[in-house]
Image 1: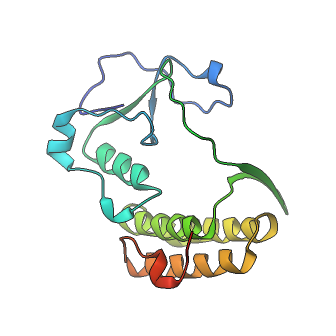
Image 2: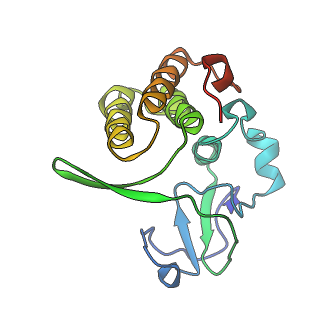
Length: 180
């Protein structure tokens, strides 16, 4: 839930949990997926609707960043539940790193890469170069090592990089020949 001003609740310190039973009843967060997402109409009046040009993936991240920049608080209601199909995860064992990733088909890899770059361009400044691009390269290495359709994954990544660095948004995977 995004609250447009000060929260009426006393909030716990933000934390990362691995099990549902460990999620606090109420906690302040930094980002929240659009699954089960509630917001106050005054926030929409203030910052507008989510950016439809993201098409899919990371639109929730951009909206949370915009909301926080406007002074809104993001509150996680831990006692709420939503039923949503789970995306397959895998653990990538890379040199000096063990990372958990979602398995993405190439067309989603395009949007993941592109939208992360667009967000970094808008909100992160120099961290685009020091964190976002290196993180995406590590993500590509994991995809090539652990996911099927390796050449398609690489093509989707390159297309996402080109469009993301150029700031081109909208539904564009088909323009690159990347089909579901």
